[in-house]
Length: 144
Figure 1 (cartoon, one colour):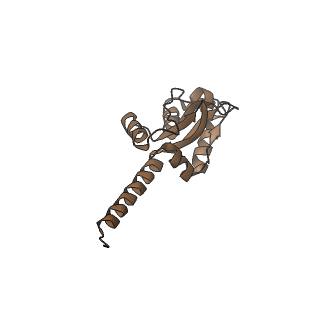
Figure 2 (cartoon, rainbow, N blue to C red):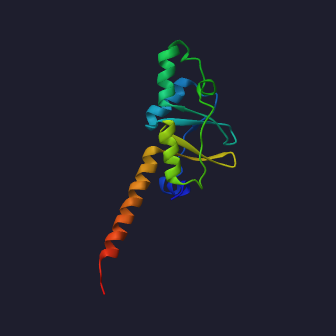
Figure 3 (tube, helix red, strand yellow):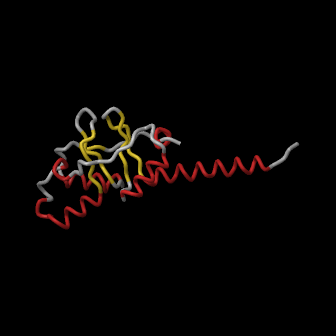
């Protein structure tokens, strides 16, 4: 299974913010949308960086006084590991596990196509395992 299949089944909802968004706005989006990461993007849809819940918590712990004045462009992680729609789900999940993050932007030709979470990938791997188990059960039946 490839990432494109995960994106098509998941749907196209993608939350992005401009680099000018305030840290408070980003935190409100994370809270109201019940998501763990937002993508910071250019007006043309290019990935500039990401901000996770962990980034917000870390910033509050280290520099709460600046929280009201800092923007997404200053707060974001700009060294982002991405995948493509053609990447294998197991490979992407392995990278996420090894690197210790729960979300990975999907980028194609420099433009953001979507975002997958470890939960999205696990859901698809479980569904795939169920299909294989059902297929094996049917093949064990002998109708001849």
